[in-house]
Length: 108
Image (tube, rainbow, N blue to C red; front, side, top):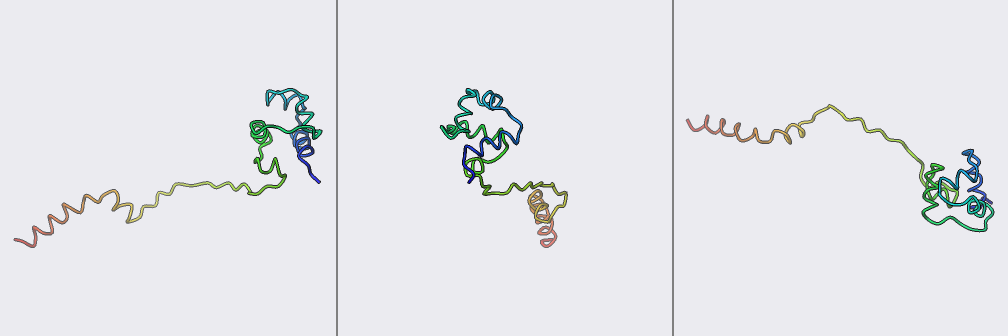
C-alpha cells in the first residue's frame, strides 16, 4: 500500500533531494519533513501546493498517488487561411458603397 508518507519519501528520493533541501524550499525545519515521511504529521495545504510544484505533479497525484488526468500538450498553430466569413467580418462596410452603386445604376 502506498501511503502518503511513503509517497513523500519516494518523490523526494526520485528527485534526489535531501530532507534539508526540501525543508529549505518550503521554509520549514528538516524535522517537519522527517515527521511527514514517518507518518507523524502532514503538510498543510500551502506546503502541499509547494510540494506539487517542487515535484512537478498535481495535488491529486501527490495526495492520492493516482493521476486523474494525463498531461497532454497541445500546440495551437495560427493559420493564415482566411475564410469568406473573415473577409465579411473585416469588410462589412463595403456593402454600403456597393449597394449605392447598384441602386444608382437601376434608377437612371
